[in-house]
Image (cartoon, rainbow, N blue to C red; front, side, top):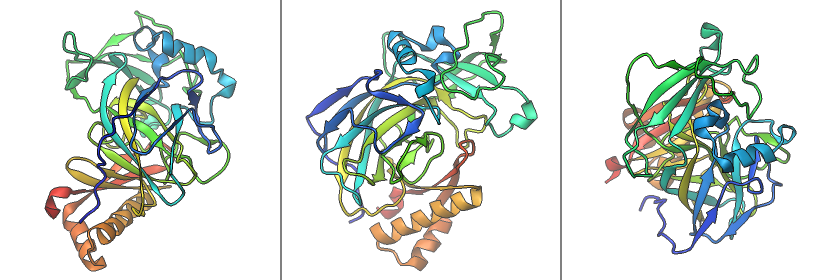
Length: 355
């Protein structure tokens, strides 16, 4: 039987609110002490806060978010940019295991998000400026759940600093600078975590920006409700963190960001033995996804493809020749993101072909 990353649901639920004592800003560190310890199989309701809330503080900040901004001083942020909630230790997780994180559901904290066409975007050399576009969810009256679509409301050129190169910038609301979007459009909502992962093998503070085999800023929009990601464990307890919540993103994330917004999710964490993955492995209701990272697209795509061949050989017991052929005719290679320094690619194959 092939691998299945869907353990039975637990009846034990924890709550982890985003507060100054449960959040850290811009780094991943295996020595960061856990703020919560849970048993394998437990469910956690967890809050995740966007580091772009300052792009429209009148729409994207509430008292809890303002408290985090005030309590975590700029000197304690970095070297990356993302606000992370955690880490969470999972009892029984040991190096060599896989920590399964199943996304049960998500709901928006506030109904607005920001897209920043930034200096790290793919085409910054063409545009020569940075611009913020604010999106609103098409919420149904009385609902606190995600709707099907969002819409761009207005944009403005970023000028709070010469470059948007420090985390936590606040752009004071300026009605005169806010320009309506050119025409009505509706964007499919794809709520997900841009950043999620486990503590790395390396010591010291690592930037939250580049993704790696421990997860981090993978930016795969499929990591939303119904998906399960398996992370290879490098330290005792796994030490899971989440952050960089998004309302929507396209493959590539070419201007530099997604629709960056705060949300609350219910996740289940489970320790699995014998999976053997050495990079994030995702199961969705329809597909398996492997991930690759590299200094360029060639390296990232090769790693994603090699991870898929490993998966097909190990968990579907295909020969190397059969896995290679099947990957060429049924696997889709995609560009996850091109704006995080380290390029990310993913390889997807439909689970239905094995039924």
